[in-house]
Image (cartoon, rainbow, N blue to C red; front, side, top):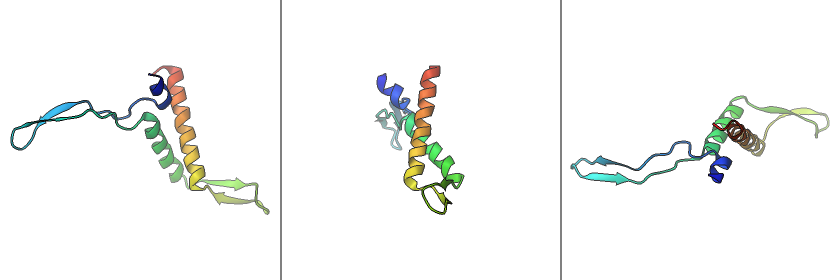
Length: 94
């Protein structure tokens, strides 16, 4: 349970099940937990950030300029957003 508080638990779990194949033989599949909710939120945030064509005011350059965020900066933002979503979810106990 503690791990689910950190990563939000599974996003798309698939329970163990069975089905008939073409020859009528019962085939069983194993359960799969799927990606974590944290991974899912990070992917959604990444997509949203990238779709905005993110730019920032760069105070480090002279003269000051606007630049595009690096992939590393975008990834960090996506994970920060995802972690914030999980923290809020845990706070609301939903």
